Length: 365
Image (cartoon, rainbow, N blue to C red):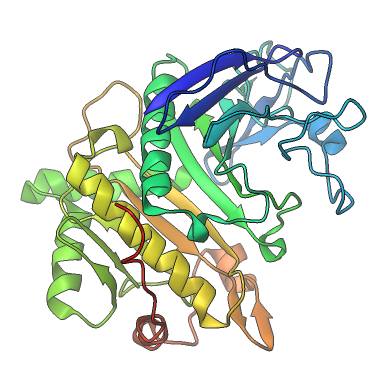
């Protein structure tokens, strides 16, 4: 993997990645001339026992732009400046102009609940220069590069003393609130372990202390033996609708043997994980012959400096409940109580995905 870091006129950074050497002489454009000086803050939620981040300046960010405007488009036009340069790069990462977390956050607030600076980092990951493509359409080699990019960003971000968790994710589709359609995801780096991964870590840690091996690794072994909900099975990676799925068409993608972070993947694991990921994405798109909406979140070990042998890198896909004539969002019991109510069985939805034929043999490894 080749990489190059560039500085934008407003002080933000841009990282370019490629499987081939990146040309010299590239410059990092920006639609903005001056720094934003973002200063988000956290407020403590006493009833839930968790932090909430506040960044009111995000109200001024780009939202529902006209179709002809795309600040991620790779064009150099003085009347329509962009975030990305022309060049031979394949994947780009840059600092979010309107972050919910910032390494520059500072100053206490005098509130009736505890408050602290929302120290962290928010980055945008542009998967490809092709604005009309999608993650599902990228070659296996390109997806393998993306896994390496996530590994590099996790290592770089995790070195900050104030960053304790790095979460790559992708929101795809207007159904989940996407306003810019150039294929991209984000990376949020938090000063604390957020509630959802914290709960996962707690469960995994308790299991590891009691049994000496991994909770998810054990579940994957049971899923493979049961074989009802498997979407992809390779020598090193697996994708399946979990027996405990809370969403229709929910799928987990993981290496079969536990690794803590992207940086811990072996070459063989990375190659097979790319195949598992692409298979799932192609099956999603093949369900109704349309670009399938989802939230994809990658969970890995905290970057708090402690060892985490209980951690198991994996992705979880949360699609909205969609059929050709119906779209369902979370209801009161899910949002208010956190108690999910499923009116379909994971086995039924796994069978639908299993029956979607895909062919990635022609893709290069």
